[in-house]
Image 1 (cartoon, rainbow, N blue to C red):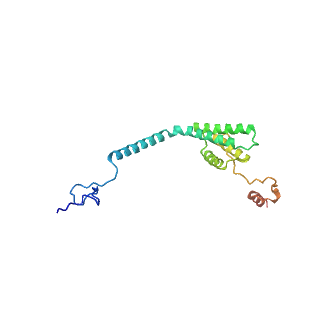
Image 2: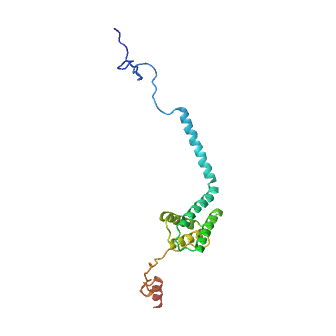
Image 3: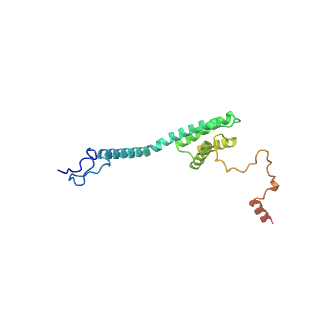
Length: 185
């Protein structure tokens, strides 16, 4: 009677498992093949070159991209204007959008006003329907980017509808008034 090595499984099937003392070279299964690694490296290099090309041309592409985004915002704002907005105010809004885009294209846009405009446009995109005050503020911000008007001042606390403004006699004196009274005494 001869004893055979464990080359067959429990029902006489062959096993694909490597034998611990078979003497042949053992290769680890899995891992990436060389062509796959080369393909990944070529893809990374091509993406890097595309990124460099984009950065090289970004100065030329940004005004066109900004114009496109302003056109999208203009369509959104025009659809959300209050009903009492007149045709003249709608035309002023369209002219302000065009003037802001032209100022960015020729490089004469005020960077501070542009940053304020970006914040207002994001607020408008989130809020949906615009109030008259928001729409006028947006027009003034667009005109400030183009250098057509001074940037809007910080909003003061305006009385609500139906509320009377505080009489001047009840208001606290300003520091300038106090200073003038001290000098007169």
